[in-house]
Length: 143
Image 1 (cartoon, rainbow, N blue to C red):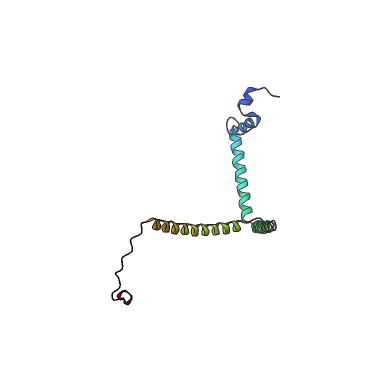
Image 2 (cartoon, helix red, strand yellow; image 1 turned 120 degrees about the vertical axis):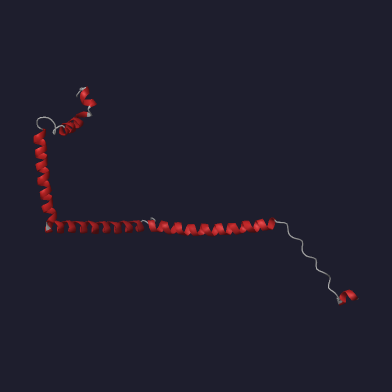
């Protein structure tokens, strides 16, 4: 077990190892490191360009993507079938329930509003009924 406090302060051996890579570009070996890195990047870039222009590589990438998309679609179908078999609601089922609940809520709000208006009108004092004049020349009254 290491008791070196400098190692603990630096973040452990992993951090020291990474710091060693960052210091490669400095000091006496820095020029050699930069030259090797530049050559490697140049070689890798050239190889990747050749690969990306290759018909067979592009065909393989296309087949791989096609297979991946097919597998994803198949997995989605199986998942939907499993959900239906377990009688669990799907997203579409839940959206339909929410739509129906919204419609019911709108109807209840409209009914509540109508009832409140009717209640407010019932609380208003009723206007007195207009008096009707007695009928003229009623034969029952003449006797």
